[in-house]
Image (cartoon, rainbow, N blue to C red; front, top):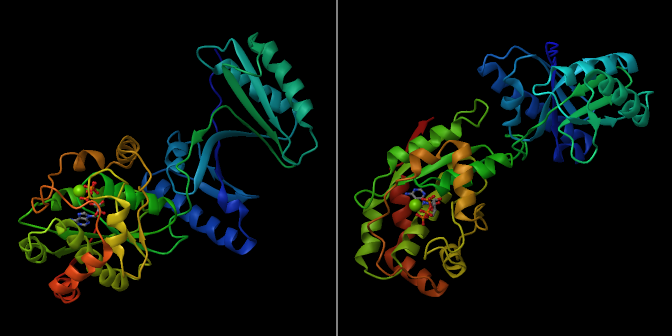
Length: 383
Ligand code: ATP
Ligand code: MG
């Protein structure tokens, strides 16, 4: 059997960036390229990089490169490619070699030609390269359900041949959007919510509320932060802790069914102050509609009533199983799967809160002043 020719580059495709005006596209491409370069450098992958007409080429033959690149935010897909001259004979020879090197040998194959601006038409590519492959390995052509696909693109200056594509993580390049402050609880959902906003281009700071003695999830929260750090292409993450146990005690002492709602309002008020200090433009939570009794639209409306900064809930319409799948991908699942729940929660938490009622209790408790007091006790570390 022929030895498999080694690929020389990774072709990186990105989606939405290409739709932007020239200035934005250029700036986002640059951010993407530098995020990719960081990830490769960190993994010790020797490479060079070039940007060409809506794609990035990473010159390397390191077999880890396409998987690494595919997990950089903004990347739609990545393919290890073989570069040839834009010459039918040379392309045919390369395609035939790739087919012959495949193990087990395919019974059927398809050429997927693309013109890419060169002289050779895609029909010509399909026919000529197809018969060369057929001649070499004796497999039949099956355009609908082939065992092997060979993609061939003939440009003016070069031709690309490749046989596989790694699906990318998608989104926008991290750093192309403003910062967000994500509330991280030590549970499964919140790191996924933070990651969703990162995938959409936002760097993050993380805020953990220490609610001892009602529950202690600081270890899990910090581990989630470390998992998220793995996705930042080298950016450090600020991890802020604010102790709110004494505040929650005041709230719980009221003995109403609204404890969680009032606790949440206290969290939001503090989060607003941290957000400003961090230079962030919104708060992010791991809410998922109806997942627990307290995460209802009525409660969300009451909790956010009168709060004038944006609060994002990127998981709001996701199912638990989908959230868990992302948590596994992100690397936060193991650390967060067995986190205890808060002991201050009433037996029958309120599910249909009324905004006026909550705001009245908020004033009675002086949550605004309490928030400022607790904010003053914040601690900040860099992960
Ligand atoms: P998670 O799995 O993220 O803990 P959950 O389904 O357990 O979410 P809640 O405990 O009601 O739901 O929390 C909802 C959201 O509020 C969390 O996703 C998180 O964003 C925020 N939150 C809750 N507790 C804390 C905390 N101690 N510190 C910071 N944020 C918190
Ligand atoms: Mg929780």
